Image 1 (tube, rainbow, N blue to C red):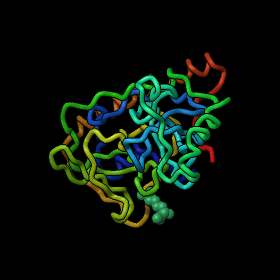
Image 2: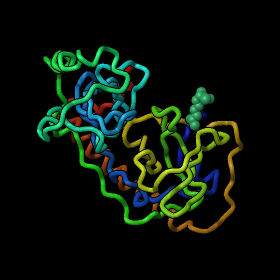
Image 3: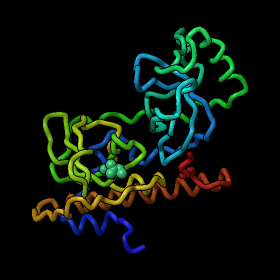
Image 4: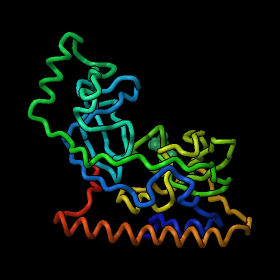
Length: 265
Ligand code: MLY
């Protein structure tokens, strides 16, 4: 398709550089997503972070899971990376001597919770411990610079990952703005936030990268500096991509199926 979005062209067109991999708290090669729809796990309730609940995988998208808390409604789905510390295998809570909690907005009477829990877990498929990946280490410093491009989760539409720009840097915080959109979706976050990814991330995970919006014109960056770091960055991205392609091919051969990249429900 003619209007397909390609980072290479877009970086040239905008005269910009992508933020180097080292800036992000993400693994250099995205973690493999082995989860299947229907599997259960333990997750922190996003609306009540001290609670650990049972969640069901209701969709797979790139290196992320679409999750729904058992006993909650279908309007509060949330997305987590397979290497998020917010998720873990069923049984982790019990091992620690903690109790699984009903989600905020549990639809039935609380007194029914123990029985509900028993029923929801009985005969269900639990995600194996090996599917949960370790969270990558936090980069020591905030290395983001204004103007660098990246891929970022639209927090108002968290299933979307979009082309974005670092538009401000203050201490450990960065301001993420969405290319082609007029500001309503922009946000401040920590440099080690898990919602931001290097250029090429979606391509590697098989996720869908949204094209830039068309509310604002493409901004041409006229600053000539940093062309060599741009080259170095492109090279490291290509290396990572080659490695990931090799890894994926290997896994496909082993398991006889291609990597999960389908968006369900
Ligand atoms: N249709 C919605 C979605 C906007 C998404 C913007 N993101 C990609 C930055 C709206 O226009 O509000």
